[in-house]
Image (cartoon, rainbow, N blue to C red; front, side, top):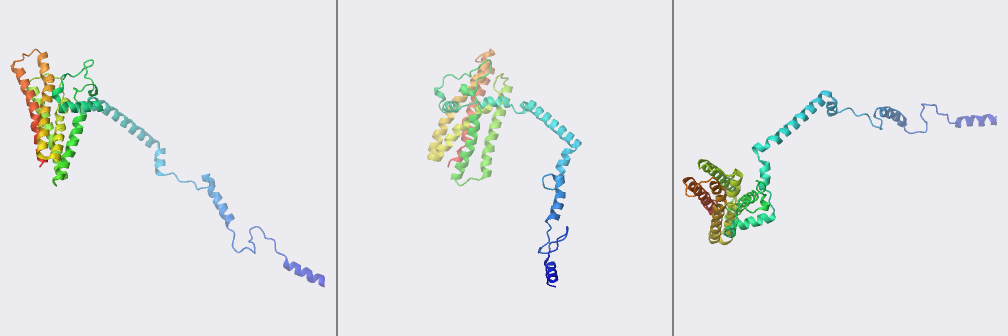
Length: 304
């Protein structure tokens, strides 16, 4: 009897063996990791790296299309042909090769040229140097025209004009723009008038349009000096410095342009006292005399 009671108690204390798929009776929560793992593993297979395979983007699908690839290749070919055409014909509209010559300057040239513009009376040799029928770069010849000094002088003149207007409480963007556009308009009018005069007088010269812009742009250097002295010392300083610069630019233009205009006349065998040669002399003096007048006209209202 005691054996049967002990056997019955032992059988009640036995823990049943869990069958596959059955939950552990001591487990508080259901274990869903295996199911998720199986489901996740099923999704890993296509991606190969543990992530779902990404669907192809529209851009990738577009690039994979043979028609799109052909269109892109055709567009690239057209762009290359257009660039080649522009490179071949750009010199017809913008003479980049010639412009590079006029900006071939260095610090020593700029210093010597500024000294020549303020003190042309001390300079003796005004001939432009040539090398195999080609004028040497400006950095090797102080007599060669350049565009660096006129361009920088024009920008500086506009800035100084803004400073002068600001000190007089008259500054405004519209007024500064009017000042710059007026200077450009007068420069353009000068170039056109000289070209027309050279055509009417039938002057065969190597003086190009860019040369004219360079020579006519040197007057901005004297204009800057006059306005700055006017700001520092008033009207007296303005008139003294501007007067000196006006005389200097007049001498500079006479000695420079006569070699461009009158030298060709001598080479053509035109008599010195001939009518055509006198017209060329008058033209040279008129261009030189116009520079001081424009220097005063563009600066007198900036000094009070």
